[in-house]
Image 1 (tube, rainbow, N blue to C red):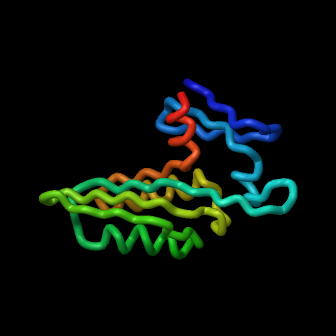
Image 2: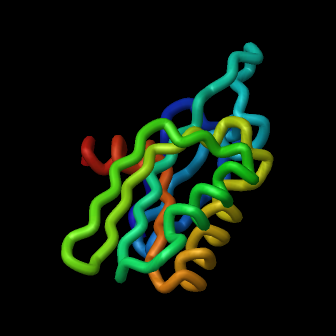
Length: 131
């Protein structure tokens, strides 16, 4: 497993993703989402939804997000033949749930709906781009 440590992290919590990549999250990203000076840090995530198209996919995902105070910043959705594909950029700042819980609950919604839902922190993409 590869470990990526963001700078200036004293207290960290490791997040294991897809059994291959671990990211150490700074404390402000896992509890309170505030830096030392009280300034609020926007925590963004990428949600992808892929699978056979069926009624209610968008409704179930968006209802979950709204119920958990997760704001949709950008969304792209397409259907190619009978296959559904959606990508969302969301703001997790106001959600009181831990990222791992959000990710697990969205995956469960996907299972129940017959699609695959993945939620990844935006920082992962920034870190992978630098590697």
